[in-house]
Length: 74
Image: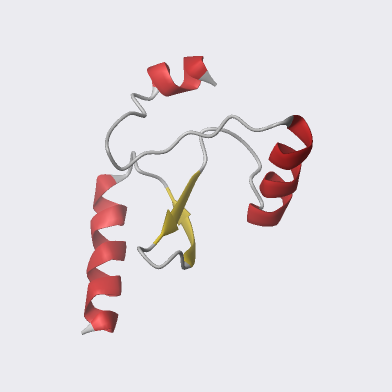
C-alpha cells in the first residue's frame, strides 16, 4: 500500500488511507466492489456514496462529475 501511495502521490488533506485487519478489509472491498488498487470512491459530506467510476487522475472527468452534482443540489 505504501508503494501505491508514493507511486500515485496519494496524499493530501482530502485523502484517507485505512489499514484494516484482513477480514474487515475483504468485507469492505466486497461491499464497495473494489477490484484493484488504487481505487477511488466519492462520498459527500453526509456520507452518501456516489456510484461512479471515480479516478482522481482524470481531472477533466472529475470536474464534469462535480459540476453535475453541484447543479443537482441547486
